[in-house]
Image 1 (cartoon, rainbow, N blue to C red):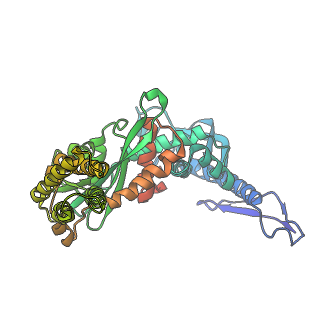
Image 2: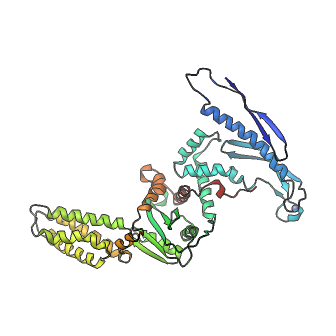
Image 3: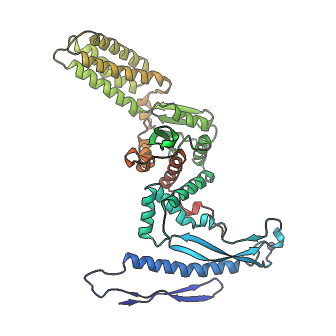
Length: 442
Ligand SMILES: [Zn+2]
């Protein structure tokens, strides 16, 4: 079967143009393949793009003759050879520049109607797609995926990486649209850290990337940044908060796992107006360790002493911490430390177990002491429907950090590279990275 495709374009002025694309011949052997193949589809798209683009550029060039301000016509300055990439192939051609109209003298003498669209020698859609894929897959793989499905020009991993960097910079520079509803809804920030392998020239093993989510009752926004590489982490977070309608007086609650640097990032962004809450899950995990160690100790047949002395405080620990009875929990914990220390001191059969239980108790005790100011009545918050754990940010750690930069992926990152990937990935997940977010001149 032979296929003939004719493209007919009609400009606004009514000028029609038809062009015939290369003929296709499809195989007659119906048992092998049906319909168009990927390569044929790509070839058609590339030709179609070339044909449409040529006419479109001519149309826009002709329309740019009239000055939009005063209506007088502007003469041609010159034609410049230009090369730029689109999703469906590379365009090579001459692009016109016009002289500036006399009504706007003094701003240089030539302008191209395409200058804004073709920044970085690529269409915004291609840049966005490169950044989106580069934030999810390795740069080499992203390049391969693009080449597989699209008739775009040959992709290099460095191009994808550089485009990701530019898109990340655009995201950081773009002011978020002002939120119309400044409400008094509580604003909660879930923040967590991802540890990423660092490139050897930075003289350290790991890089920290802060990722998280800002939530109000009806909106949410993800963020990711490498504090080392961000020009101003505070300004970036401030922009994210502003996007959700934060005003200076609104309280911000931060939930994190006891690592002081993370809530301090938000403190920097809000001038210190932050209520920090220690993540319930991280406490719970440590309590569980204590419970298991104590249970293992008292359930031994040769345990010397009364089971209840150790078991009762261990069993009430969780309840006390849940209900905000921090002092009681602390006292119980100290009893257990004293008892376990006594058992660990003598050469008893249970010595190893007692030492293990002692270490667990010490661990929980120091964790609680270090975060004393961030412990709250979790039960009360929970009953009021307020968040008490970073479980929702853990998803962000996976999506933003580990999916692309996790240790399993065996990649090493520079602080800036990690920052760009995190910023872009957060925007992709939020659906903020669409072409309409990029400035496109008409
Ligand atoms: Zn003018």
